[in-house]
Image 1 (cartoon, rainbow, N blue to C red):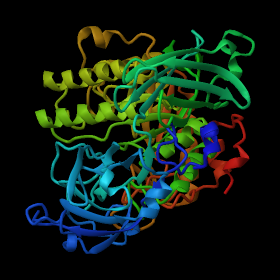
Image 2: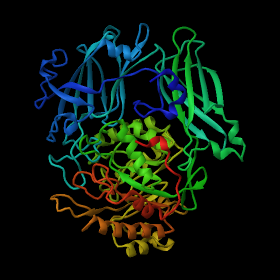
Image 3: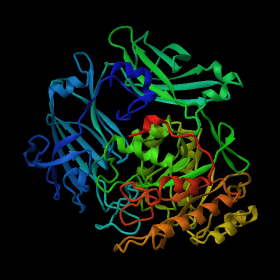
Image 4: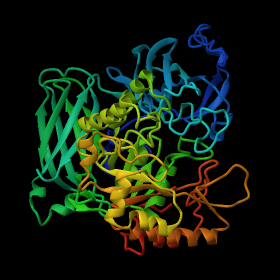
Length: 616
């Protein structure tokens, strides 16, 4: 990425793997790697990391071996995988590396546990299949090196956060073929010896301030300063230079423009006006190279009042669609960076204001596009499927890493640590399972108190900022009867959910403290067209695309008529494997013309035109 791009991170092309902490140079290690499956787990004992001759097959990284895009396409059980790649001196140079600097090797995500060797020496390990990690490349390898990665992903381990990845060998019901091993970008970058490891933005429009928490890789030398400059185009919104006294420090920057009530809205991020401000951040040591970074942020607040979801203290229409983020050729990995852009643009073009990313932690490059396009995101943790000490430990650890990774994205407005009591199946009967849901709510609010948290999406809520219900009733009259009046909604909350489970399982205080909390129908629809294809299904099946259009029109009209609902989420955006209830097919081709779908979804409401920069 050219140096001048550091001043305009908000308008990058969407290919940089870490869009809110951008440096000028990097090297993408995607492409052909050597590969081997290790069914007997012999590789460590036999020294494959030191003598990798056994790693002789080929795979295309970052695609999982179960996917066709990897060049393998074997959907069977493969617990242990080995990868090997020679990193050339030219790639090290492409990353901007030179003497006196530190070379970093980044992994976007490796499912589930990864061990990394460089030139035969073990240099790092990571557990958690949905979060990034970094290893330092030894100085001795700076002219090129041999890289080996071992990934372990037990398909039968139900205590492992796995989301929709099936524990049966063949996909079934709502679970899909697995995504094992490397599935997000692997890349190199060179940084100064003392450098910024993490940036976290938070905003307070009412106080007219922005806060930046910066984390370095170690203690700064005395006299080290941090320069921050926030701009809107050519206009400087805030600038500050601060001396750093430790490896972690929070800066508060005043934005005087936000104090002008008549001009304030022009500075705020909203779905209709997704303004992103650029930030130039520079770490300035008294001696040696500075660390120059480009970043961006959006200023907005999220809250609730009077049964509505608020952005910047104003009600927003929550018209959401459920996205599995799954492609037939590449599974959870995106086919390429442009596919993430097109996915976000498709959702916006259909008239949705929000996307519920279901059972997947999305690639940060997708979140860049939701930030830029103005889509409200519900971020949801992939589930475990047993309740045990190990499952709790893994869930809490990885969820913490997820919230820390993504808390600077203005588009994320709701955190969802649990879905439909998966992993806490007896939450209504077992107090420890209720305590986990409650703990995850409070942990999330502690890590990020600026967003809404749904403790358990769908039913059996303990403490939640939103009460969400999943209801696949396809009779529009029944939907109107259940959600068309406040009394009917209250009866649903106080009773049994449409699937036969209780809606509220919290303490008497939690269950009674519902006044004014928004209620949303966070899953409904699920309509499939009968294509006479064995093994496919939907929650309701119709005979043709014409029948689909008629049926969807009545469903969307019904939920729009339910005034007590603060919003809704249609299941789902795309056909996914055997679950063929998408508004598009698995290749993102709409089943009904986009303009007609948009009118159904919005009820004819006028929406801002899509920006021409997103045309293919």
